[in-house]
Amino acid sequence: MEQELLSIELTVPPEKAGQRLDAFIAGETSFSRSAVQRMIDSGDVLLNMKEAPSKAKVKAGDEVSVTPPMPEITDILPQDIPLDIVYQDADIAVINKPKGMVVHPAAGNPDGTLVNAIMYHIKDLSGIGGEVRPGIVHRIDRMTSGLLVIAKNDNAHVFLSDQLKTHAVSRVYYALCEGNFREDSGTVDAPIARHRTDRKKMAVDPNGRSAVTHWRVLERFGDMTLLRVELETGRTHQIRVHMAYIKHPIVGDEVYGHAKNSLGIVGQALHAGELRLTHPATGEEMVFTAPLPEEFMNALEKLRKRNSGR
Image (cartoon, rainbow, N blue to C red):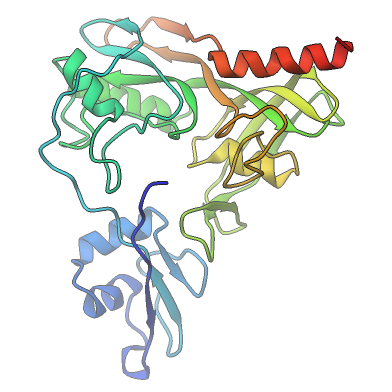
């Protein structure tokens, strides 16, 4: 489990009533006002258990919760870690990340990450992500496997980031979920924010950011269902939160579901299997696929054999 800093809890005294939220926090902590604004924009600040804009005026007795970001880790070193490079050219690289690998260094995971690996195998990387996240345009969770795209120069990074913001990048996941779905397909349209009491988690929250997940049943196993899931938005833990919200958590998800399962799967059975994007230099539409990892395939085979009575 990645380490996370504890939240700072503040109560607004009468003499500070009427201040802007960002100014109040900056005055009560060692953070600069711009750093506070970044935390507010990232959903790391709660005003009376809800997200609020920087310009919100605080009142006497208001409760403010601030979760500081992880300290930046410097001196990131290339490491000769095996890396499945699905595609590479002068502008982008597409990586099939294994389950269990953290994308970038953070407190508790200073090395052995995807960034350490790509720094060894790929010499030219975009610098927009800084020293800790060179080339990283988007992330997938540590215990989720599958595809992500790496930018090899700043122009490619900006282009791909814009595609992600406008939802022009198509990302398809395969998820093994608990229970039997009543319908063959559906959409979960429910906003997501940081959990109000457990800051390590995300949750459906009417005050959160828009989050839309489309799903379709591929195979039914009675007590479990294999889904094809497509993201319309890209919020942190989106698929995991949405599946738990509709009472079908992903098998093996110890955070939003149940860690123990009859298949012995450790970590969520979730794989980013398809990535569709427009190439930043050529304008060509490109589609990349990655097969289900062995553990996932073995679990499905067990379920098929069980259902066939063998």
